[in-house]
Image (cartoon, rainbow over all chains, first blue to last red; front, side, top):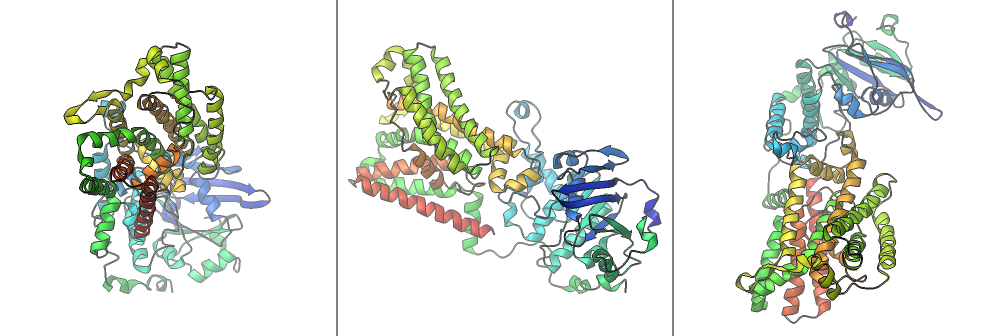
Length: 265
Length: 354
């Protein structure tokens, strides 16, 4: 299965991740592989430890044991900033946007660009023009230019548009990996469709994507491989073209054993 | 079977594209006003100020004389300056009840050192402003690191700083004649810079305008300023965006303390003497000015020019009403109503944004 991608070296690879919260074991030797140019779906029942796994590879949680490698080089993330500096961008389920600030402000929040020369170095003046142009370019690359005013507050946007801004931010600054946590959970049918198209657009730019979702039709539609998480570790990875949704759900809930050839994948 | 999963929304391509095309919803006249007010938050206080000046001019023609108008500005300079500090803190969804105590402690540090101890004036002023900054940073530490609610923190430090003020001052004032004899430059901000057309423009008024411009610039055009808004707007989103929220919060309270320290120098010039029981009502007066100026008590939206306008509106109302022969308590009544209207307006705007 998925033999076209398995020959490559993984972009992001984790081995034996452990995380314990008191007596609760959130990750119990979890493995993870993300290959270049793929959309990897991560599914699992509530409490399976998906979120902890994703938090570990995006720097929001520090695992107790285990290794994470980025492009074959071991990395240690202590904060989301560490992961971001290595080129891993995350679109959080709550989007992490500041509603009263403008689209351009939000795209550059935490990594503002200052003007060159004395205005930037001494007076710390921000280069609003550069940031607005950049934000507009990135939004239009993803076909979101119908947002009329780059300076309008994010709170004036619809749910789908906000998701679009968060995705555009991740795609613009992520150089290696984009992680999306439940990007369609809060959206209507039409807006979900738009966001799924967006995910394909980001992939078309050559960016590998990790997609965490409970929505099986969405996962099966856009993902190249699916990582099934169960009881704090990876149960198997499967090819959505050769397995049915009901089988995937059965595996993730423990009602069915994974196929033998899927376990090592 | 493997095909059916993506078929469920194929008909969408023929569906109405209005939402999927990311268009704006239709706009009514009311929503246009809402958007304008939200995008330009100083619009309302500017209009209120303009209308109230005209209205009081109509009721009491003497109000529109340059002398009276410049008196209004002089009366609100200290409140205006401290309101700038209060704005920074309220933008982070905090509140500072200790600004008045910080201000008066700073006046005594400056006065004691310059007048009684004979310390050179620049050193005395620097010491006063440093103490103000330290007191602010202490508030910020308790809010950011110990994670206590700002209201409780500053309620506590209000008492602590007030006690320090009474102890340090020995409950005695520093008289105007002593200041004039030993450190006259401490009164610099009370002096008139110019007297055009019977108006009196003091250095304190100029200081207020300059300080407002500086902090407007910092909030709008520096990363620190953007972070102040982001922290008040959604602290969790700010953290996930990589903002060092603890450090920023402490710096906001410290800068507010610094502004109060500077306000202390201006206050000495404005009042002419230093008294331990002065400026006891300035905490609430600055919150009033900030709220009337359109800054939201829930953080994340508002502006420095708005707060200065808010301070001026309060000044116009109190001076205007007293010129019109209205009793003091009706002045309080009017200012209280302004606050209620301003908060109601803020809530309306917030609902509009959901």
